[in-house]
Length: 118
Image (cartoon, rainbow, N blue to C red; front, side):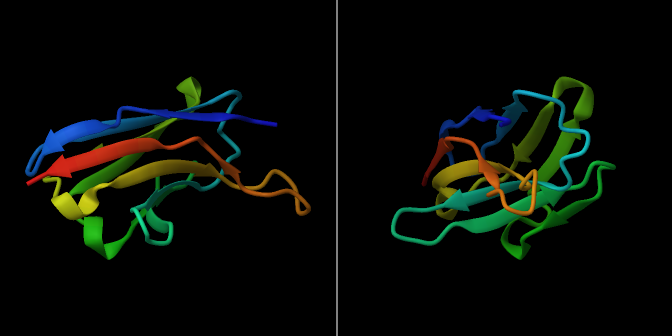
């Protein structure tokens, strides 16, 4: 089963930027779409952005115009460029790949912590 590893999280001041990466253990060309989710303390996990194999993106309203999702299928990696970060963006960010079969579960990475200070 494919494994996903996120990286790039950290502590940043409000208004700053971070770039998250999610690298898969095998080719992601057929993984459509790949998604970024986040879960703040005490809250449910929520969709941040999705990106199709062809690069079509979909964003949650609360990150529209600030975050940019991209992918490099040759490197088996998806990215999330986060700009104009706000304290409310503080959360653990997860990468998700779609289930490889009907009976399977979606595939999740271990998450990376993003903390935005005011």
